[in-house]
Image (cartoon, rainbow, N blue to C red; front, side, top):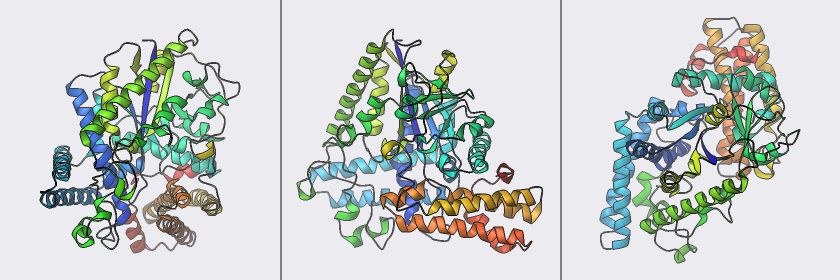
Length: 522
């Protein structure tokens, strides 16, 4: 082999669970992603396993996503969601009977939903165990992420950075029965103070955006085509800009091709409200159902019907184009690097299936085409480090993969108010641990719940949503709720008057990380 391709898929969603409501709009984030991305990815892995294809992928599963997948309430609600999709597709088969094109698309959706239900029931609703089995077969390496996906450099509180990292480590070990070697930095955000926590957690590698590696000191001799080691001995990989641009770019990226399915044109907006109401995320307002009949082409009434066969063929063509570009990169680099170059291609997992509906077909075609040549091989970052152990020592530049490459997505006029509140809560958490760290019983429970509320308030998702304006009211309310609960627990612990009934209600609502260790904030 002349070079290696390391595809890293980052799977994350914020912890959204509302047992106090029968149906909750934002819980559908999990349901849509599971239907369009994660179950199809499991189908691909099983097909590749049965055909003995040489697959080696890295999958980052955030602790919040894993916690939701394992939650019995959300499992039941997702099963109900799938049944609703099947029922709606059956109604669409009848409604579109006299329109051949639409009827074929309705049949496609109906069959697809039936297959996903069969798969979900077949894995006994346990997606975590389902993905873990492909780690055992060697197709996947599963790594972890910060506990609630906090932008670590912005916490500016070493105990909180430590807690985000070590709680994620403990959670991964309990769930998967093994340690994660790699760590996905949320938003690829690297800065001062991150290394110490990763070193204590015994993590061996992480990824930064392109400029985070190219701006390292001293300058990396081989650019992003080889990892570096930090002075602490943790390996750092840089994102390959060409592989990223071909998939992510609004102008050049494959998902914008006109033949692909339009994400926004959904029957939840097109059809009579009473007809679709039972299947909407919120019955009082229009929303996505997951059944979409149009391609990206044009606008409004000018859009063409979605041609599924054509879109799948185009995904194969794009996979061939992507592979050819990577082969040309490797050939240009021949003899210029100490070891065969590694092209690191990290993506949000939800791009493949949710945002880009044909993304799974792209991955499938790419894997099959890779198997037909002998220049480029799939690899994980840890495999590459195990094979080639000697690399340059340098310190990466503070950076992220967000807009403008730094912190402005999470610190701007829409969300900068969050950070001062977090800093007060973080200092208070350390105070609580110093006072009550050895406590047991009710005090210990209250301390653990305070830790959960602080972790949930630190999630990067809330400032991101405030910045994009997609669900700002919900994001603002989540931050306020978690901080108010934290401060109430702080007051109760300080005055030795813990309200056990209220604490139990909190434990039942925000129930992730049952074994959380508050001592990490000491």
